[in-house]
Image 1 (spheres, rainbow, N blue to C red):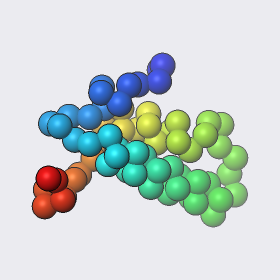
Image 2 (image 1 turned 135 degrees about the horizontal axis):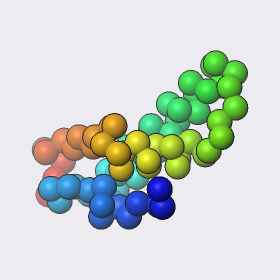
Image 3 (image 1 turned 180 degrees about the horizontal axis):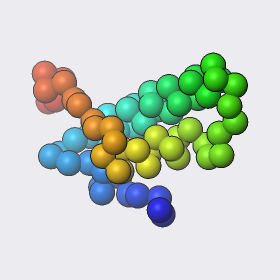
Image 4 (image 1 turned 180 degrees about the vertical axis):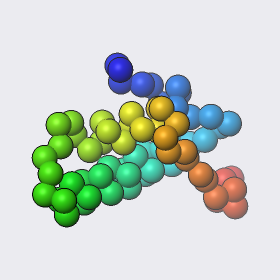
Length: 68
């Protein structure tokens, strides 16, 4: 899959910032799991996380009280 654009991942006026934070958190989880299991990743954790969000394996949940 080519790099998906953020516009393709975001739905319902979700913020780019929230997507970046969510991808970073998921990438950290992927990296930590690989370290604990002593496995070598074939791709970078950020790419894996972006692909998971693009494939709707993970969804972005924003706190509505934080929106202005």
